[in-house]
Length: 368
Image 1 (tube, one colour):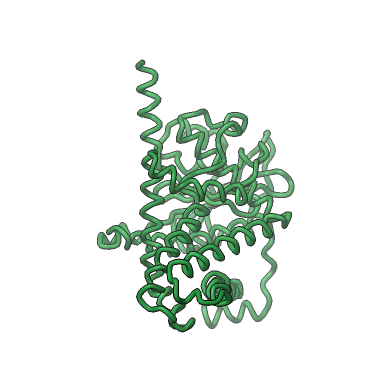
Image 2 (cartoon, rainbow, N blue to C red):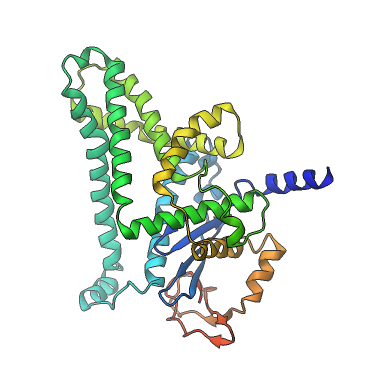
């Protein structure tokens, strides 16, 4: 009986303590302010980026209010996601030598070409999303005669079109080999978190037996936002029947922060409670995760578990022991590092020194 109570207490203490994201050949885990991204290089070795990401919500209490915190979290996670993907690209050696134009931009404008490309890609991505998930469903609904007279049915048609587009998009990109591997790492992320939250021993062999579906997944969040959008669409179409498409898209954009806020509150609640209500509303999102997560290989689980252990080393003596046993050697970071305390660390494996890494040019620590 005592063992059961201790296990339940352990599981309760671990709930919502860590979250993650899959990247190219790697997994990022976030625990508190610490974010750790582990990637596997072509030679089989692991590269770990140990970073700190402090939410602005800690500085301004008003941003922790319900609904507001969801919007803030969404923006911050987008920013963190971009930074994490840059780390994985760097770990895999995708970055190329700077051109003269890039050096000029960095010197005179304080910008990197990759930053400019990322901004352009983000803008194009937003425009594409607006077209696919707002304009196109609206156009589909307009093809059905007399549907304007039935705002509820019109909203359901628009919502159904969004679901079909969303699922078709996920299915098509899952056929791309590189994306499929990212989805496998996504599965590794979920399995290792599930293993951790269940109080299980964090080993690849053990984590493989846990579920790859998680109620706090971003996929579930996106799908739940679509469902909320159906309700919002019913509200708009009922109040303003026959609204021009441009005005409709504009109103939807104005209400987007509210939709994001509600979606975040539900995901937060679902992650802490397991009842008939949360299971029913979480079920569609969990089903969609069958598209965005794939069964991982053992070496992928090792990557995810490494990120968890390094991210949680300050709160768990066993994980601190894992960190210390790796034998990472500290080196001084580049003098222009964003964080004066940044250090580069190199890992010694099987008694052989790993080839030294390039100096770190930002506030991250590199474990290699």
